[in-house]
Length: 171
Image 1 (spheres, rainbow, N blue to C red):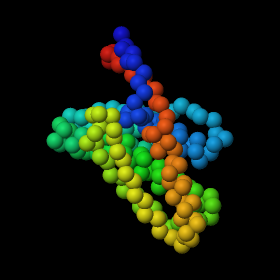
Image 2 (image 1 turned 180 degrees about the vertical axis):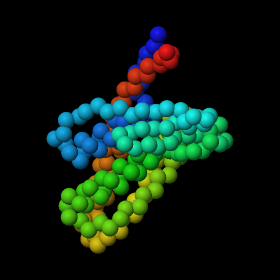
Image 3 (image 1 turned 180 degrees about the horizontal axis):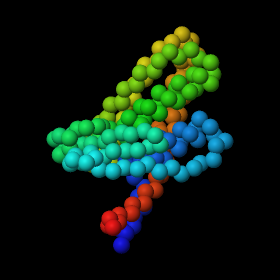
């Protein structure tokens, strides 16, 4: 019999499916209807904790560090959560620049996390974007505003995510 877990509203446990893929699709094409998508994960054979992740035609590996009992074969789920924010901010800036004809050559992004208060309900992420190109002060201000409006940032800070977990015995 499957176990149906209680739906949770936990901003730390954002669903990557909703958080990154569907939201960016909606942000970049607001007239497109929202469609569900499925991300498949399976334990990597021979690895204690590593998971192979399939998103459309892409394969990724998530794992825990050796100190946490994993093989460190890929970023941890926690790292992927943090990286989603940085990737979204960079993609949003590049998309906005292209739409407005702003000459951005590159965006380098760093995300620094502070989990020191996570157990008491506060998780801090700090992002730093370095934008290169021939950009006026007015254009730079527009890019800063765009970075602050990235969809993942909004999801992490102002949207309640409901998570339902179903656990079943394998046949």
